[in-house]
Length: 331
Image 1 (cartoon, rainbow, N blue to C red):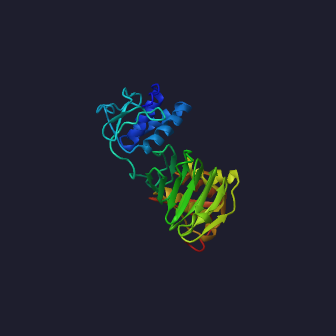
Image 2 (spheres, one colour):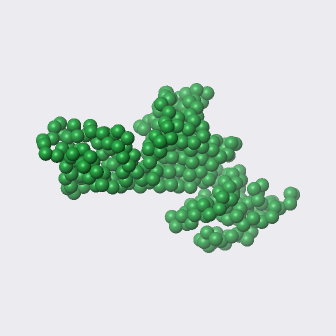
Image 3 (cartoon, one colour):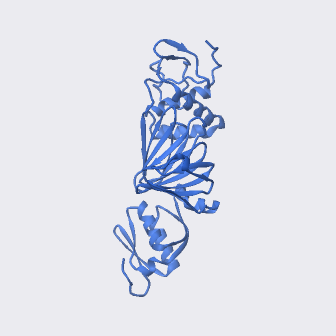
């Protein structure tokens, strides 16, 4: 048996976080503590990714100490570093120098993440990647030895993928698929298809019925619209356009010539209090600017000032009408 590597407290704590996250033992407060821990030291993220890679490769691990995870503190360090694998052999810590302690076979397990209407959330995935979910979105994650599979069931998600050349990261949205390794991209579910925007690195995207050999190769700024039977490359985006399109990640709606009607529809997607544009011609007027997604009243007031409209508030709606004239072509 190979000699055991020196004990490393960072690797040990990373192993503890891997096991807790996998078993669903981390609540909102502890998840914030975990994310804070990741940001404290550049070594923490690397240790966590190594621990995840090793954890995924283990078929079966039995805990030697039943009280190991009894304390909720993020500062608790396990004092055992050995595993019992396959029913009898005591093994040294993993190749990454990490003891991964939990019970059972984790392969094939699905984990779901979702957001409510009006909510935007960033979550840490079990492989060390992150996903930022837009309002009313849902994904499921399933890890195996051969791949990391994420299914976008609804909504819009931006992924920052932990790099691992031997462990492809696949996103399915309906019948369409995107493959990436160590990159960042957004996927929007659109009915039975999807739209992809690449913000970093390279991805391959293809229609569900097509062969991967026919995939579109997309680099930073690249985007495509995918359906069940075709993948269409769209005009590439400049950096400023990427930031504008993905401003929702920071809770903003960035307008660059969209109509008032389009902007109102976007705000209504995030808020229970709806903006109603009562005049068709007013709805076709165009706007430019950054607006907080969860402030429909502020947007309506700014739009009214810019377009010469009137704001009427009533209950769960905000009505925009032309100032000093009859509405034409009511919507």
